[in-house]
Amino acid sequence: MQTPSTNKATEYRQLARDARERAAWLSMNDARAQLTEVAQRLETLADAEDERVRRGTERRRF
Image 1 (cartoon, helix red, strand yellow):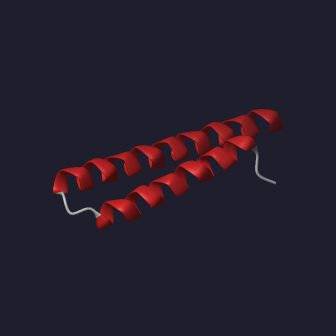
Image 2: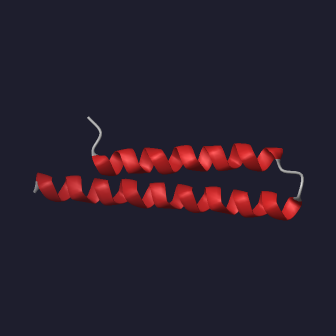
């Protein structure tokens, strides 16, 4: 079962994929680069959310 935080990480990853797909369609290099950067930031947020959940799970085990 996914927790709300895990769902948030999944949502960030989906948004990142969407941003990358849209970036591929853009003809302006600056806009493409900015959207790709947004996608990377979303991936970073997803990783941080996963780490937060993992740490919370570890704390509950002890």
